[in-house]
Image 1 (tube, one colour):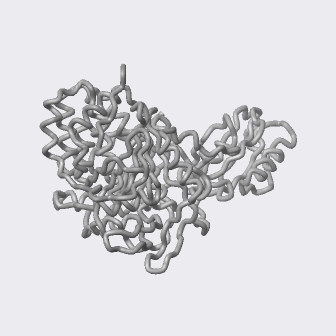
Image 2: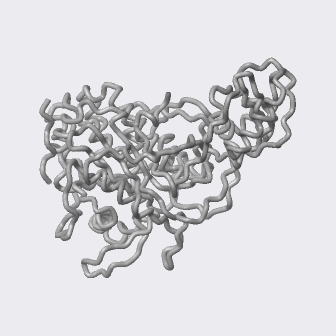
Image 3: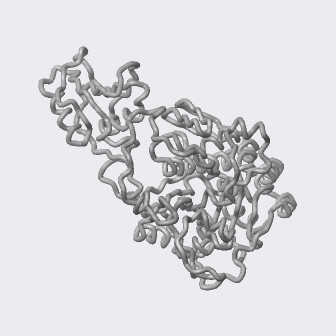
Length: 483
């Protein structure tokens, strides 16, 4: 591949999610093998860490550590190349170097399926000032193109690797996206854990407790610095909420943004020894195409010296139908063809994905108003204010009692959203509809939230939960981190 240029200076409706934050009931499901989604993040970190301040000798010594594959051999009828560089990042479920102690501690048991648990298409802009990352769900309905003695046939996207390795994976992704892949990078989760540890951990903030009995993740609400094993639990978790894999993808994107922030702000880029330690941890379990080596890392690093979290953007391919049933494959994820094509066209034309942000009249929240029960109390002496607030909230979709009452305290100035600590996600969604309101945790309040209307009450803002079958959500790196 040519050296990168240098710079001159699906549609059944989802089951309603309980409005309660924290532990929530989940329908019994067969435990699935762990998915190591963010192993791909470590490979992206190599690209980010290849800084201008790193000597050539330091990086050159690492090239021999990269195992090589040839996913482009004899490939014909490929898409036309565009501007910038497109990297296909895949994460497989290899676990040979995980110790028995780590397996037990981080719930890493089970046999590998030898398939791709993670597939991400990363576009580095031609001016090297932007990285666009598009997640391709592993269960995406795909059609393997005819070739190598195989007829065209339907398949789940992650199974292309098991059937034909890196080459068939690249061919299938190019067939689906019409984006020409310039480089292929394949990683496993061992390097992910090591890299996070070498970086000194990655900072993650959560406004709600995150608990997943399958991975062992148990994070209270707050600010955390996750080390390798904990970080792996965070990005694997898929039983935290009713969104399963889609919710997990969002957490993975948040983690990727936090990893980039850590790498670009910690001084590692300017410290050859620390850079060497990080890249050794990563490259020890990477497989890459023959054209992606030391020279490409250095050239890309020099060009991206000003890279920052705000330079990155993340999206999931637009979904047309969840639970799309296919004979012989079972439940798959069917893409929204028209919206997906617009997204991939932006990559081909080297344009920001942010231009395709869904224009919303309503603010997006975690919990839909229809799932939130509300009792309105008038905390002022203004007659009828409680009724007005109740009516406005009901019109916005909230399940109000329809019977507002007077509050014990009638001198409230700032509207209060009182909630049981277990329903904090619902409380935040309700507060988003009441600009300027104050959140107040009240133990024992139960599932019905209370709005105590203050003299500041004006209007109710429309809110709604994000819908992956309707929205193309593009998240910028600096929007995903801690405030």
